[in-house]
Image 1: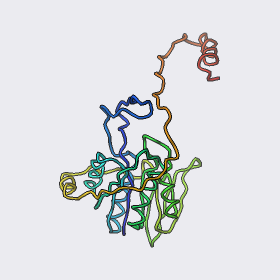
Image 2: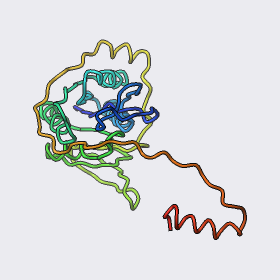
Image 3: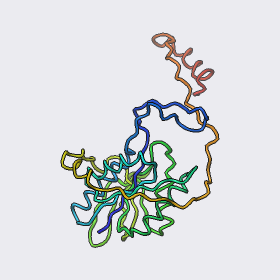
Image 4: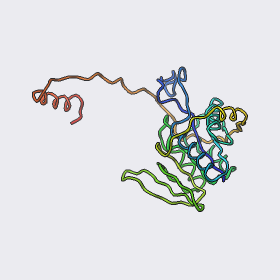
Amino acid sequence: MKIAVCIRRTPSTETKVNVAGDGRSLDPSGVSFVLNPYDEYAVEEAIRTKEAHGGEVIAVTVGSADASKELKQCLAMGADKAVRIEPPADVDSAGIAAALVEVLKELQPDLVFCGKMAVDEQDFQVPLRVATALELPAVSFVVGFELADGKATVHAETEAGTTVLETPLPALFAVEKGINEPRYPGIKGIMAAKKKPVDERGASAVPARCAVEKLELPPVKQGGKIVGEGVEAVPELVRLLREEAKAL
């Protein structure tokens, strides 16, 4: 069984970011980059599936040479191979998906795992764009996964609760936090990852359909205000909520 897992290098959610001088991108100075947190769950689920059913796991990303660090992390966790695709200039979600599709068409995986979204863009587009281009059934927000008799049974979170779905393979699954607990790479895995090469490729240029016109940080939150104590403070609290906070 061939299992592909699509990953992305993103700024850590704990790092402080600043807008670059062009006003349309992030200043990378002092920013800590990590494997997209949702993709960690995807990598773990791919490895667990390999351990249970055999096969190989191939981690694929669209990113600069710096993204090799995150690919090596996947290899240290237990992935067998890694592919890095050099992104075209001004690539957007459509371009990232197109670059992934080029490689996935060649790999012909039985399963494709990815995180439900990247924490930097949060647009939820890439997984479903890839599935559409490959004409694969796809399930998002997956919190449970089982494989048997050439079919996958998945539990997916919805606004109404959890939905249980069954789909034939090949298929794509965008996983949610909580599907598993990602493992930490051990010394043996880290040492083995150093010997596993990263296959580096280019990608066909795809005209960008979206462009960032302006990027700005959210306004600084103002401090709280104490308007009084007890029931006597209620009228003033209601007035402030209505006139200042515009919450009523």
